Length: 117
Image 1 (cartoon, rainbow, N blue to C red):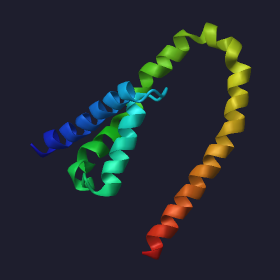
Image 2: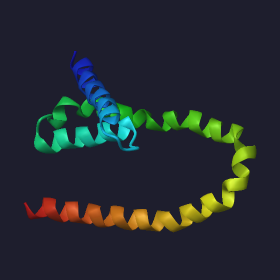
Image 3: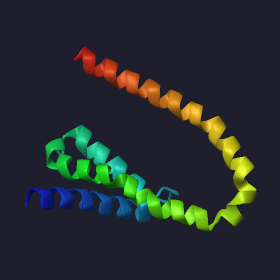
Image 4: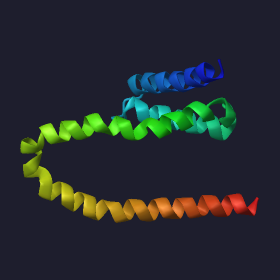
């Protein structure tokens, strides 16, 4: 029963994210709104981590399997995507170091904040 409750909480937050997508006139997917909502709920303590942790860990463990259909789709569309390859590689090479730097700085700040408590 514990797992069903945890999954129900996660599904309700995902559904709320989809509702926000329809209400807010921004080009942001419902899944992103759901992540933001879950983050806010966890930070504010409205949802305790223990109430979703086990199922969330299971879903994260299953995540690599979810990339298989996307990879197959890319392979099937290779003839169309081949012409975009130089632009994609250029974008990846330019953006990846920036994302890594920002992620590293945010992680350092969070660790420093946690250690100062």
